[in-house]
Image 1 (spheres, rainbow, N blue to C red):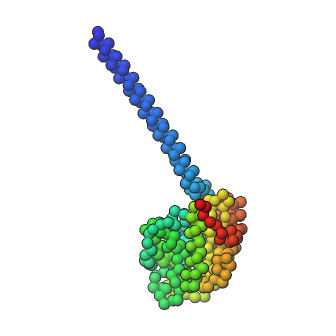
Image 2 (image 1 turned 120 degrees about the horizontal axis):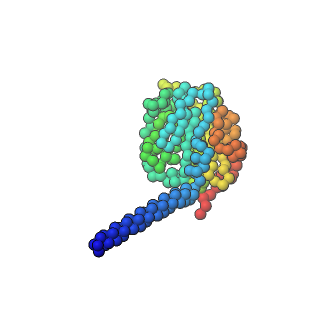
Image 3 (image 1 turned 45 degrees about the horizontal axis):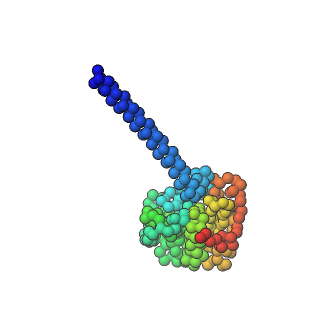
Length: 289
C-alpha cells in the first residue's frame, strides 16, 4: 500500500509539474506576443510616418495620364514610369526618395540600353551625334542604395533628349537639392518628365525619339507636420534665373501637362500642397542637428 500511495503521489506531483510547465509556457508565449506587438508598434512609431501615411493615403507615386496619351506603366526596382511608345520617351517617371537612400554607396555604371520588354523603347545609338544628352529622369544619383536600382536607371525608357546645358546645369542642381530635401524631411515623392503638350518640332535617331521643348518636376514632402509641395518647369537648354525662376505650383504643372498628381491625398491636403510655390522656404531648409 505504501508503494501505491508513493506512486500516486509521484503521479500527482508529475501532473502538477506538467500544469506548472504549461502555465509557464503560456505566460511566456503571451509575453512574447504582447512584447512583439509593442515592439512592432514602437518601430512603426519611431521610424517616421512614411509607412503609415503611405498606406493611409494609398500610392503617392500614382499619376493619372490623359486617356488619349499612349501609356505603358512599367515598375522598376527604384522607380515607376508611364512610357509613350509613339514618342519613345516617358510621359512621367515617379519615385520615393528617402534620406537613408541618399547615403547609398553603389557605384554608377553607364550601362545605357534598351528595355526589350517595353514597346517603343529607344536604342542608345538613337542619341549618337544628335547633340543631346541621354538625360535621366530618375537620376542614377538617387539609386545608389541598390545595385538593381542603379542598373535599371540606365534603361532608355528612363531617358529623354536633353541639351547639355540643362542636363549638367539647372536640372542637375535640382536633383542635388532633392537629395538634400529627402535627408531633411526623411522622404519625398518626386515625379518628372517631358512636357508633351508642347508641339514636338524635332526628332532624333532611327527610332525618331521626340525632343521635348520643356521639362517638369514636382516634389511632395508628405511626412512632415505640414505637408508641402512645389513644382518646376525648365526649358530644354539654358535656364535663365535657374531653379528659382523656374519654380511654379504643382497646380500649374498639372494645367500645362494635363497630368494629375497625388490624387490619393485627402482633398484638403492635396489642394494646399498643390497650390504652393514657396521656393525661398524650400531653398533655405536645413537639416536639424
